[in-house]
Amino acid sequence: MRVAVGADHAGFDLRELLVRELAIAGHEVKDFGAYQMDATDDYPDFALVVASAVQSGEVDRGIIICGSGIGATIVANKVKGVRAATCHDTYSARQGVEHDDVNVLCLGARVVGSEVAKEVLAWFLRSVFSGEERHVRRLEKIRALDAD
Image 1 (cartoon, rainbow, N blue to C red):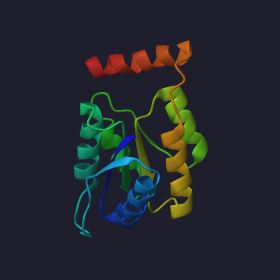
Image 2: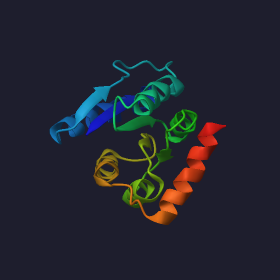
Image 3: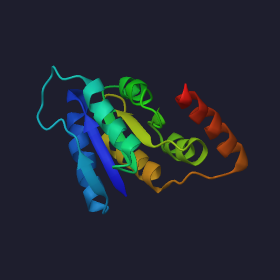
Image 4: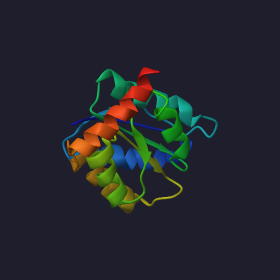
């Protein structure tokens, strides 16, 4: 799978760990940084570039890491076609993809530890949208919002 990853200073260390995990698992990783620690960088910059890569089809899924995961989620969801969710547990990561076709996972490095983050990432990547009629119907309603 082609996966974009980006993080601000708060997610810097976790990004490095997850990029290594993705490569070991055989995924094609598009790493958008941050490439060096800069306490003055801003999560919207990294969230936007990852979300844009998902929107354009350059990658299949995206991962954005900031302090809480929430700011990154807000930014990513401003990009048409992106369905981002903050997930700090495996159930939300799996269910988000299966029911809501989530294509961007946002993590809070100050909220979730590295081992949990690796498990959440694994479930996010192995999960597939169900295609069930009720989920498709709901997804179409979400897509209609993008048209506005």
